[in-house]
Image (cartoon, rainbow, N blue to C red; front, side):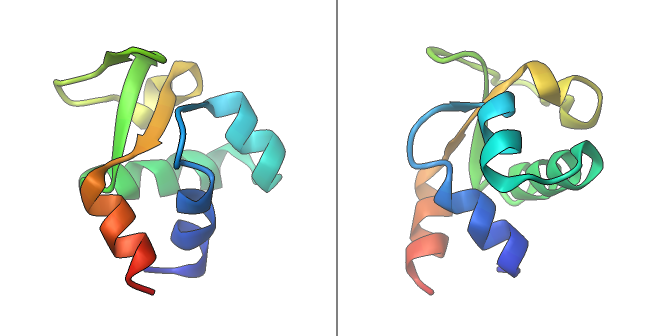
Length: 83
């Protein structure tokens, strides 16, 4: 897990909207969206349309990610806590 992945996972113990992640991390959109995409591909995070509505098909993070909410998955939490 890279430092960026670790820092982002720190923010995802609870459901968070994109805007919160951007404010907390201070990253540019491209970096944040690409890191979210990478975590999603590893199945370390879940993407949601609303805080209680998970996206079960392929999430389009690079295109629509600014409108999503995010949460660490069980797999992601285990990876994050293993370090």
